[in-house]
Image (cartoon, rainbow, N blue to C red; front, side, top):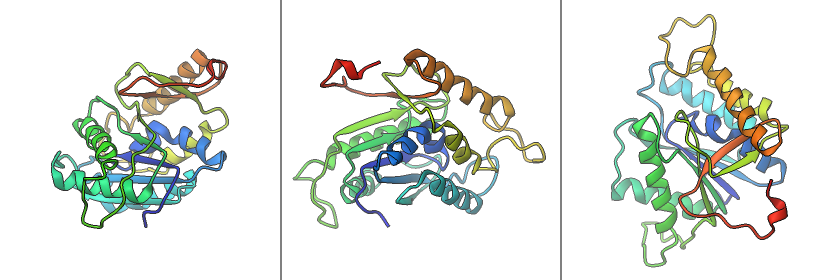
Length: 237
């Protein structure tokens, strides 16, 4: 059930959120923030696994992250459109969850669904704040204070880096909850760009490289479509 949370993370497919932002979500949880997770599709076009297995994996991953809820929109993998119907559902979710912070898919990426999901979520966050935008449930307007896009397969230059020191191991555990999708020596399923062992190693390397930039062990990177402000320059690394 969707309920008010401090942080709401969206992913086009189950495992998108964990790959891009699990460390940040774990950090938020440790600071007492409540978390909601929303998957747009069931990942039914994935080469490995199946929708039911991925549902079970997503449930396990949500437990590792300490999420207050996980909701699947049931959009068609690879076929969901930018239209009023899809936009309206996301607006209603934002208005129900009333998050202060929203995390969404990458602004551009190898998988076409990611950028399309990013656009849908970003616009839903904006329209959710318009009092005159009516929805079927008569939900009051709400606009999140901040929207950030996590970085996925493509190596985009981050606008902001967040330390995830102390949370990287749990981040990896949440990713490995999707056993059907990632490296498993005994797996007989076809290999994909994310299922070989080097992919998981590259995740660690990227987190370490980003961490080095800000003087920590591991970090996650995000993009913003607008300039970000800070009240105290001494809070920046």
